[in-house]
Each structure stands twice: as C-alpha cells, then as structure tokens.
Image (cartoon, rainbow, N blue to C red):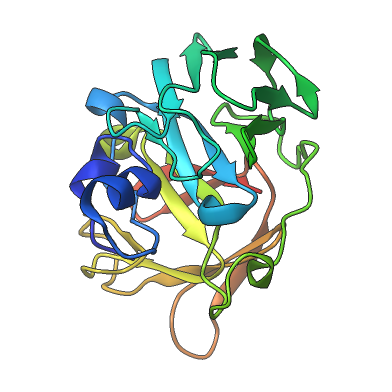
Length: 252
C-alpha cells in the first residue's frame, strides 16, 4: 500500500481496477484521494465474501451505479453481479439503494428489496456478493452498528491471509477535509515519509511519527518513537490529531 492509484482517486474500488486493467489482487491506497470529482466521502461498502472480501468501495454524494460493467462507478467482479445491477445514492446524509433489475436480485439484511433506505451497519446482498455499508457521518464516540460476521480468507482462497480494510481516518479540516485514509489489519504507519500507509504533507510530522495498530473491532494509536511511545485506544468516531491535521476514526 502507500502509492495512490489513479482509479482510487476517482473513487473506484479494486474490483474496477482488476476488471479493466488485470491488476494484481491487492488493496489500493486511498490516501490523497478526494472521491468522485473531489467530493467528500459519504460512506463505504466493505466486502464480506468472495473476491471482494475485506475490500472497501468509496461512495461520495450523488448517485453511483453498481455492476460488473467496466463503466460502473462501483465495479464488481463477482460472477453473479449483472452489468447494471443496482444504484446507491447519498444526498444530505440520506442513503438509498435501488435495484436495476440485476439477476439474483438485491437484499438488505436478508430481505429482497427493489428500493430501500440504508442505515449504518446494514448488510447488502448483490447477487451472491455480500457487503457491509458504513456511513462516513460522525456518530457519538463508541457508537457500534450491527455488523455481520466476516469470514476467514481461507474460506474463499488458498492463499496467505491478506490485509483487509478494518476502518478509516476521515479528514475534518484543511487540505484533507472529507478525504479518507484506509486502515487495514496490522500496523498502519504514518508520517511525512513517502510510501507509508498514511503519508501526510506536514512539516510538523517526523518521517515516521507512529502507527495505528488495527485488529477486528480494535484500533490503538501509538505515537512517538523510542522507548516510551504513547498509546491511545480509539473508539468509533473519536477525533485524533496528527501533526497539523484533525481526523475522526471509523472502525468496523
């Protein structure tokens, strides 16, 4: 991770990159990505099974198509997803999902729907593919949505466990306002050095200033180097200051 992919800057997930360019099956950094046409991020779909397990797809304000077609805003490579399967819209914080007649239908929390309003933590079924919806709106610190169990990677692939998306940092003010930085399982280093998981342009930051230690449902901010770094456990929607920049954290 660390390098920004041009398609990530346009708000497209890794599935779109694979289907269009045959890229390797790896996460693409969201750092420095402002979403569709520079809009603020409004939420994410996170894969729960199959090819997209542990991957996040950014959703910004407006209406975005979901399907297997290469022109889809959210391009999915799952074989049961139709070319134009569904649409997801965010307007003034309200999120809606609409079926476009995709084969095998559209589910929200196990119920077949043609149109539905989404809430934080809802499970979405697009064909046989399953996703969790997370809103980028700030909730009360410690807020916990109803999240579905995530499968082990070995259920779907005979490969070494991959680093999966377990949360995000969302900019509050200044040059990073409304932008998201993916937090993946394991240690996410931050600082001013290039090619870190979270590289920030900030003269107040050391090249390597610390890291976010992320596991399922847990995130700890470790700041400083040497023998006495500070440790701060974080809750969903907590605000954190990194150098000159303020963010809030979203934790799956």
